Length: 325
Image 1 (spheres, one colour):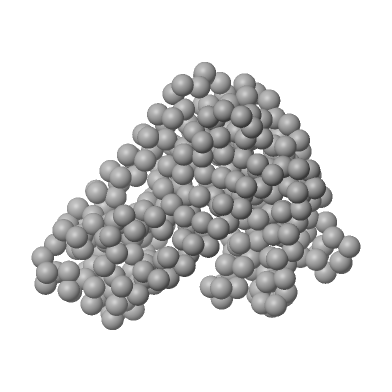
Image 2: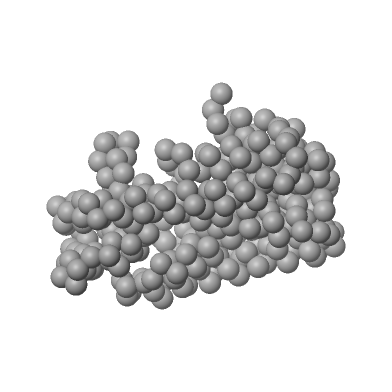
């Protein structure tokens, strides 16, 4: 059995029902909108976000979920989908998970409006049911994701960002959404108490590990047997590169920065940068940091009693670290 199926097993029933409720939450009186949202629903990915919501809820409550949990999962998916639709417009991207993006099929104007529609649907789903505590969690996540993207744009022009700034960018850009999923799950079943904050931190740590794993993919052999160097070509500052820039001579630093800034389309030069980062221990350092985040996340689960939901969350952490794509 694939690891993702194993993770899904304890919440299979909830996920099935969630699919129905999520589909309903998108419906509109406008035929064009329904056509587009139908297309969105049918190209779903691994569905990690709703899985985090249901597993967190069931672990902290001893196996119970309620209508709030389903709404929380639907809202986070609606709002996440809205941000993806907008991202594709911003990045001028024609593909998403192997499918055509909304803007590729229906043009930018429609894509932006569909994103706005999904965002408002998510907000209204919470407001109509008085889930203001859940809405707060989601709204903070949306704010932080926007801030993280803008912080990255602001810092990307200068290639001397510190490790602290890098962590702040990935915390906001990537980790905050997973943190919101775990906090939502806990808050939906136990609005009072410490569980929401604990699960928020758990999700944040997993998100940080997830992003560092992504950074490492750029330097490790891919499916066709060679490092991709895509981040270098896009002048993205990743942890292995930041570490090496802070731990090499002035001349080496100058050479790396010049390579990334002015020769990022030169395949040979990109290969040389990858080799240099490896040689200087950048990958090893990033891997250690990733494992540190993993251990911290797993420690937060220790006080909870053993259950299939806790085991599935532990498996999810393992999957994030060991995934091949």
